[in-house]
Structures are given as C-alpha cells and as structure tokens.
Amino acid sequence: NPTQVGTALQVFHNLGTLKDTIANVVDGYCTVLEENIKNALDIKVLTQPSQTVTRGGPGRAAMPTPGNTAAFRAALWTNMEKLMDQICAACGQVQHLQKVLTKKRDPVSHVCFIEEIVKDGQSDILYKFWTAFELSNAYCLLLYLAASMFLKQAFEGEYPKLLRLYNDLWKRLQQYSENIQRNFNTSGTTDLFAELQQMEEDTQDIFMQKPQDYDPEKALKDSLQQYEAAYLSKSLSRLFDPINLVFPPGGRNPPSSDELDSIIKTIASELNVAAVDPDLSLAVAKNVAKTIQLYGVKSEQLLSTQGDASQVIGPLTEGQRRNVAVVNSLYKLHQSVLKVINNQSSFPAAAEQAITTALKAVHDLMGSAVQPLLNSVGDSVEAIIITMHQEDFSGSLSSSGKPDVPCSLYMKELQGFIARVMSDYFRHFECFDFVFDNTEAMAQRAIELFIRNASLIRPLGEGGKMRLAADFAQMELAVAPLCRRVSDLGRSYRQLRSFRPLLFQTSEHIASSPALGEVIPFSVILQFLFTRAPPELKSPFQRAEWSIARYSQWLDDHPSEKDRLVLIRGALEAYVQSVRTREGKEFAPVYPIMVQLLQKAMSTLQ
Image 1: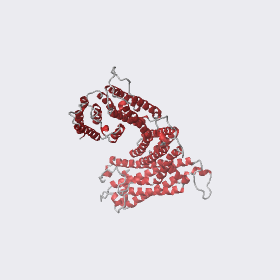
Image 2: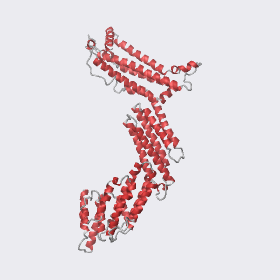
Image 3: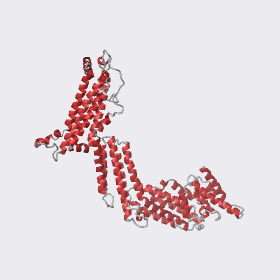
Image 4: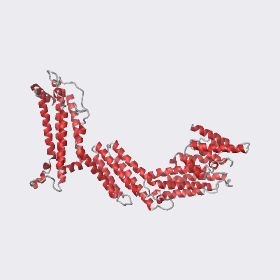
C-alpha cells in the first residue's frame, strides 16, 4: 500500500533514522533470502524421508539412497520453485519501497526521500539488494554443489529446467515492476501524492541508478554458466553417440532407416528441451550443426571413388550401389532435419541459420557423390551426338518426299542410352527432385551439343534436311527421361523448337528471323549458314584444320559470344582473301548475308 508505506517513511524521516531503517530492512531481506537459498539446496532436508528409516552414523554423508533419486530430484525442483516465489516476493517489496522513496517528498523541506538515501554516493536500494542477492545465490550454488554430486548432476542434467525457472523469475519481476507503476498511476489518493515529484515514467527498467555496463538479467544468468557448459557438453555427447554407433570403424554401409530415425529423434529432443531460452536454443543448434557435419564426414568415408563408380556400360556395380545408398541416407537426414526445424515454434533466426548452413554442406556432398556418374553419362551423350557426322546428310529428297527412316542411327542410340541410364542408375535414388535438378542440366547440355553439331553438318542436301528435321523432333523424346517436362528446360527447349523450321528457310529469311539473338545465338546461325556456301568458304574449324570434336571443345572453352564471332569473322576474311587471290569476279550469294548478320551481331554486343 503506497499510502501506508509513505506515511511510515515520513515517520522515520521525522525521527532522523530513515537511512538506517531502510538499510536494516534491505539487509533483512538479503539475510532471509540467503537462508531460503540454503534451505532449498540443503541435501539433508532434501533426503529427509529416506533418513528417517536409517539413521546416519557418525560422519555419514547425506545422499539419496539408490533408487530414490527420482524422489530427491522432485523435492529439489519443488524447493527451487518455492525459492523463486520467495525471491520474487522479496524483490517486489524492495521495488515497491524504492518506488515510494522516489515519489515521496518531505512536505516541509521538499527533499525527495530517495535523495536522502543516495546522497553519500550510495547506489539505490534495489541495485544494492539485487547485487547482494546475486552474490548469495552464486556463493550458495557453488558451496552446496561442491559438497553434493547429486545436486550437481541434477542441475547439469536438467539445466533447461533450472534456466526456465530463472527466466520465469525475471519475467515476473518485470511484470511486477509494471504493475507497481500502474498502481501508482491509477491511485486516487490525492492527499499523499500532492507533494510527489513529477518524474518520467520508468516502466522500462526496474533498476534506476545502476552502472551503465551492468545488466541485471545477465548477472542473474551468469551464476548458471558452469551448468550450461556441462549441459552442452553432455548434449553434444548424446547427439554424437548414436552416429558413432551406426558408423562402426571399417563399416561399409550407411545407417538403416531405424538407425537414422533414432538420430533424428535425438536431434528433435535436444532442440525441444532447449526451447526454453533463445541463447540455449542457439547453443544446442550449433551442437546439432556439428552433428550433421559429423554425419556428413562419416558418410563421405563410405563413398566409392574408384573407376567402377562412374562406369555406364554394365549394370550397377557394388561401389555404385553403395554410393546410391549413401546419397539416399544423406537425403533422408536433410529432409528429416528440415522437418524438425519447421516444427520448432519461435526458433531463433541465428539457430536456424546454423543448422541450415550444415544442411547445405550435406546437399553439396550429395552433389559431389553423384558428379562422377553425371560426368560419365554426359561424356557418353556427347560421344554419341558427335557420331552424327559419320552419317550422310548430303542426299536429295526421295520420290515420296519423306525421309526413308523416322530418325538417324545416332539418335536411336542416344534414345536407347538415356533410357537405359535412367532405369539402370538414376531410378535407385529416392531424392527425385535432386536427381532431376542434376539430369535436367544434362538434358540442356545435350540439346546445346545437338544443335551445335547439327549446325556444323556439311554438305546438307534436301533429303538430309528432312532427316535432320525428324532428328530434331526425336531429340525431344530422347531427353524426356532426364526431366520432369521437356518444356521445363527453358531456353534450351525454345532453341530446339526454333531451330528446326530454319532448316527449310532461305538464307534471307533466316537472317531476319525474330528468334535470332533472342533465342538462338548469332554464332550458331552463322555456323549453320556456312553449310549453304561453296566449299571454298570454309567453316571456322576447317580453316583452322581442327576436327569437329576439337572445335566443340574450343566452343566450350570460349562461352563468350564475342570470341566465337571473332573466329567466324576470321573465316569470312580468309574467304575474301582467297577469292581475291584467284581474282574471282563475285562472292557466293550467302556471303553478303553472313557479313550483314555478323555486323548486326557485333553491334548488339556493344
């Protein structure tokens, strides 16, 4: 009751004993609290029920009897909850006293009572009380825990419970401070408050004159640091143990589904228990990240990196089977941990970031595990596509006006190879999205190589154009097993669709096609136009005396459109030189179209 406390303070002020009385009251609270802490942690009190049965002899240590640890811990946590109530009550009374002291003035001298208390350089009474309580708290915890292994084990093993009690205590103190402020603001007792100092509302902080670098909440939690360190160490052991168990030295197989489930349950359990406090959540999340890293390291040691891991000729080898199993295991871990994170309510962003970073490393490891196989498949696809140059596309149109066969031999081989690779190797992976993310890139590369090689075919007769157009249609079917939908391949798919009609268009029409530059690079179209020129106008690779395979490699090494156009310009300039040397009267009809196209291409690059 602010009015009654204010009246009492006025009496002691009149008697000249205000400062001493306040000091005695605060010291009294500190003494009582110290006793409360000692009683709460007294091992003799906690083990009382078991001692009534067997009286301890001289020098017998008080400790829970075997099998009675659960009762001892229950008693301890009951005592701790009671202690928090006692701390909260005492602190609340000191807060209230301080609040009245800051508001109350002597009606004669108009001196504010709090100035009487702090004028000798003393800190305010709440700060004095709180620091005294923290010293008692830290001292008693150290003293009693050093004396009792059972107390130490209880606080270290169930640290989150202890931390929650302290967090709840702090919240209650903050709430109490706001309630006091509210009571003062809404109190209608005008007779007492007529002389109160009008001061700014201070609901934000229950400590008024504390040192700037002093954080009372941090100081409260600092007394628990040793238990946190011990708890986190044990938490890490609990997380690591099941992983070390399922990856025995010399083992060759990844964990089973049940074993992985057990690891995930442990991760979920540790995160759930730590959810009482954001800082603890972050610390445990870092432990979980280390656990994921350990799983990755152990899995990587199982991967086969021998030559048989990347073969694509026969059925799955033992090494390839193991690699598939490892990737599937990593994928399950990745998905399961993501699910655990999503199920966490109010998970700190930093904690989520720590685990997500570790999961990214797992995803990267999955990628590097399948890369040798992907490279091998990619090389084989390229080797098959380049064999199109061994077939004859120079023939004229047959009497029926249709190609003799639905598609070329190389295209049949390509379709058969891709279908076999998907069924023999990739269908064993359970991570379909991950597989398609990788094989779709392979499909895009296959289309790029197909268009590149198709544009280099020389000579190309009318019958050859018909067969090549059929191959373009069949190419969509060839790459279909590598992707969810062929249309998902984006630019590559549009290039495949846009290039096919150009086979039958005049050079002038091709040069004005809206697909130029937008969908199909200028360099590819210029390459194709060489097929319509006389043999004297040599393609860039013919002028350089390279094989088509070497030219294809050069194009891979020079992805810049400018580099490719410069090479083509060199071929056109060499042609001009050769015509002048033989004193030719005119250039091939396609030459001026190519020059115009080259100029247009160069201008778009600037």
